[in-house]
Length: 338
Image 1 (cartoon, rainbow, N blue to C red):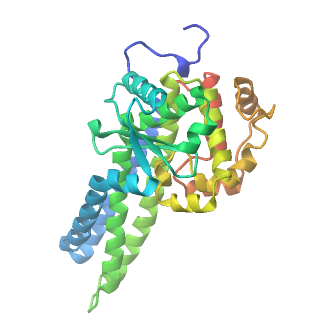
Image 2: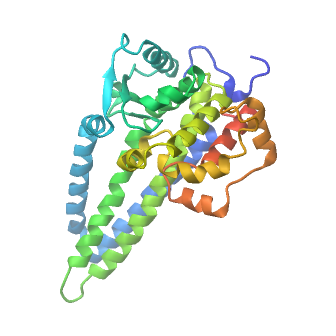
């Protein structure tokens, strides 16, 4: 419709498309990832023979495969998830159904987690196995439009199948970690162990950084996908703002207990205290929500995270929250096109 930004426009019957810039970055990152793996594998195979690669590859595939297949049970147990039926949570299930239809994916199972952190997460082993979960504190702090934006974000994770991509990419750093351990145990004359260990540990850290980079890209893509599903950028921004403040007030033991699953969350609760400082002036009228004019004020201010915040982001699964909300401000202004 006239007057809407590109991110707000929605063609009837058409699923939301990925943003071109993010897709290019994603493919470049994955391309660099596998190029590095190829050259490192050649170097190790030339030094010690291809057979040295077999054991760590098999072990990593088995461990990741078991984790992938058992992930619903692991998440359900660790995060205290109860799967709900439409009659138990009619509004929540109806919103998930509407968004999944708009994204043209099968209706996922819906769950409510009892952990004491306001957040949401999604996962699925294959196309028809999607699951969307919200924590009970999230339902208490978000209004209907903010909740719809967060659910749209999670639905887009399922549509983009990025959980499976991250799981697969995470396999290869583990291979090089095992090679590092093997190299340390090698003995004898003309021992290639030191070379194998050096190449492997360097590759482990570099590949981990690339996995984190891909993880941050998928969060941007899910934010923009939620907007493409009809959620105004200010509602997504407002929800993220509330997630940060809610996580900062959550019991420390709850945040620590969920640390192993933070990559699945819509925001990183372990960084909430630091992010509050950079978001302090975002809510100009102190209403507790982010309005379109406040997003525009952020865009015009040119505010950016400091050096320390950028370094923390470099080692994180999620983008810096100020940058993330700033990107939503750009979408609202029409500065990011598909």
